[in-house]
Image 1 (cartoon, rainbow, N blue to C red):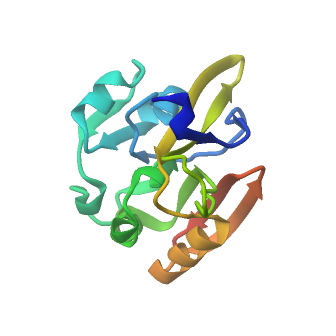
Image 2: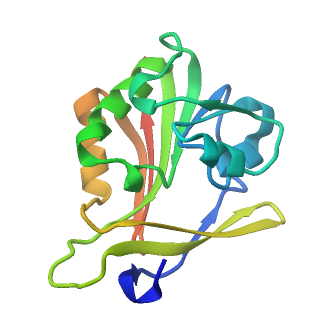
Length: 190
């Protein structure tokens, strides 16, 4: 990725050390670094539609399955928790509601979708093609340095995700947008 084509926002620090994720966890888009699999091990089923993303994911004691989030191959109400760690920035806008609906379907009543992502600003007059941030993830004493970048052809912020979640039927139990970092805990009603 050529530096001159990339617009970088300030680096993100994500501390997962005390983030509560309960029960069986579906990590949607869990390829790449496999952050949630590293954090929660055997509780995690990581899915990604791209085999190479799952092959690149860190080794750990979690299950990796090639699967498209628009068509989850799980029974209704299978998972207590679903996670999306810097996933939606890569998902075309027209597919996002379908993915939220599928996640809602496979979550048990009272289950949570925990989402981390970044604000993507309006492009405006910029000649940059890509948008991203360096990300440092802390899990206890372990630190993972990574980064995420996407084509700068969309916008997203906290309100966008809250509106999407509510449209599907989720309640919002926690939300935060600080320094262009988005963190939301959605809950499926009981």
